[in-house]
Amino acid sequence: MDKSNPIVTFLEGSWHCETVRVHDGEVFKTAYDETMRKIDGHTLEITAYGMNNGKDLTKPMKIVLEGCNVTLAQDSFMARGSFKGNVVKVSGNTEDGNHHRLKIVLMDNVFIYQSDVWRNDTIVDTQWSHLRRLEE
Image 1 (cartoon, rainbow, N blue to C red):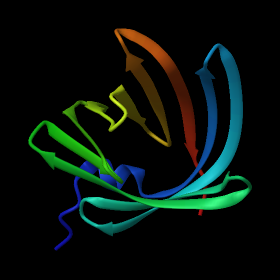
Image 2 (cartoon, rainbow, N blue to C red):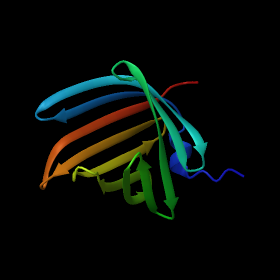
Image 3 (spheres, rainbow, N blue to C red):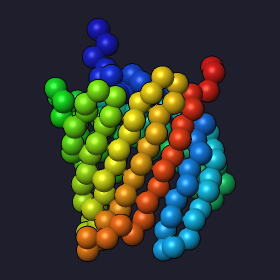
Image 4 (tube, rainbow, N blue to C red):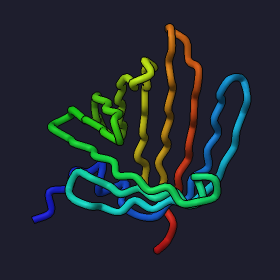
């Protein structure tokens, strides 16, 4: 029996990503394709094509859903928060002391990903991504 949570089920598949990131006052725009392959009911293997100096970048991400509570983990980063309606909101701290707030909005064949990095009560890095499901 498949015990996938609805977030993992929604995210599984192939996506085209368009991103705008603002870091140190500079604006960066990127576009790339990525694939999210379900490893188990709570884990996706995410491959972003051409994102690591022109090479593919693949990492697992675990998303645990217990009621409305969500835990997201990737590498050493862990964030906790909520899943209400079609919106995931989580936050957590990285080893460098920065605080990350993430928001994911799941909508039909698209999702919106927003990430803010906070340091000393100030946003120092922000990213907005629009991902559109690719036909398989």
